[in-house]
Image 1 (tube, rainbow, N blue to C red):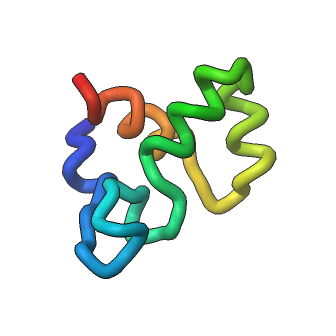
Image 2: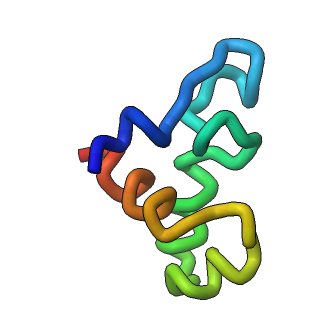
Length: 63
């Protein structure tokens, strides 16, 4: 999987922070939820418009 197909950066959206598929949820948000102890399944339940691939792209992005 190439995270560049999922992670987008738009200067006028969320101050240019990397977002998921042009949505207003940032990579930082998703990684923060995971770091705070949420499981991937919990994140997906909380944000039903996200996919497993989105979460994996967020994890791959900083690497």
